[in-house]
Length: 364
Image: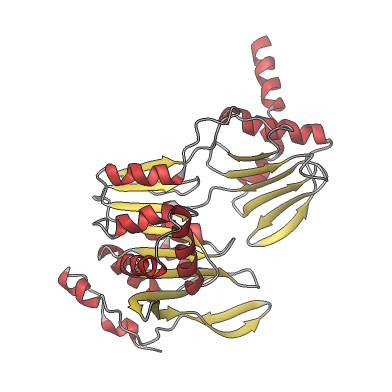
C-alpha cells in the first residue's frame, strides 16, 4: 500500500499534468501561455481564452524545466530562449524573464503534422480532387516540388501529405527540425540539434543535407529551407536527386523564388545572380502555395509550374488557383479551377506511363 501511495503522489506532481487536458483535446492545435495568468488555445483555427491552470509563476517555471531537462537544457538567465519538444513531437518555444517582461511565455504547437490526409484536404475545402490527382502524378513523375506558405498556413502539413504520396518502395530521407510525420517503411530521419549548455554539439541543416547526399537515398524531403543549405539542396536536385520535396516560408510563389535566391547567397555571396537563377529554374519543377485566409480557412491558393529562365528571370505559369466566389457567415467561399495551361512536363508523364487525363486542365 505504501508503494502505491508514493506512485500516486509522483503522478500528481507531474508538471505536465497541468496542460495535459489541452494536449489531449484533438480540436486544439496550439497552446499559448503569456505569464501564469494568461492562457489561450487555438481551437479549429480560432484563438480562445481559457482559465489558466497555473496559480503562480513558479508552477509555470516548473513546467518549463520539466520539458527542458529531458532534452539536456535548462531555462535560466543565461538561456532565456529555448526551442524544445514534447515526447509526442509537439514543438515548444519558451521565452523567460528578463527577456520576457510579463513573465514566462510558452507556445506549444501540437504534433498533428502527418495525421491529415489528401482526402481530408478535399473534404475540408482546402483544394480540389483534381489538384490532388495532379500532385500525385507529379510525385510519381519524380518532379521536384517546392511547398511554400506563410506562418500558420498549413505548409508543413501539406508537405507531409505530398511526401506521403511517395511509393513505399522508395528510400526517403527526411531532414527536419521536428514534427513532420511520414509513414514510410524505408524512411531515414535526420534532425538538427541545438548546441548544448556549453555551446557545443550543434548539428545544422547544412550538415544534414551533406549527409543525405552520401546516404544513397532516392528522395530528399526537407521540412523547411532556412539558410545556406538551400544551395546544397538545389545542387543535389540538379545532379540526379529527382523527386525532392522542399518546404519554404513565403508569401507568394514569386516570393518563394526570391527567398531561394536570397538563401543561396548565404552560402556563397559571390555567385552571379544569373547563375543562381539558372540553378533554381533547372532544379524546381512545381511550386505549391498555401495560405491562411483572413477568415481562418487554409487553402492551396496555387499550383504553379516553373517553366525556365527568360531574360534573366525565372518564369512561371499557374496550373490551378483558388478563386473567391462569395463570403457567407464570415467564411470565404470559392473553387479551384484549372487555368487552361497544360504543363510542359506532360510528355515526361506519358513516357513514364502515368495516366493523367488532359481534361483536368480544362477551365470550368
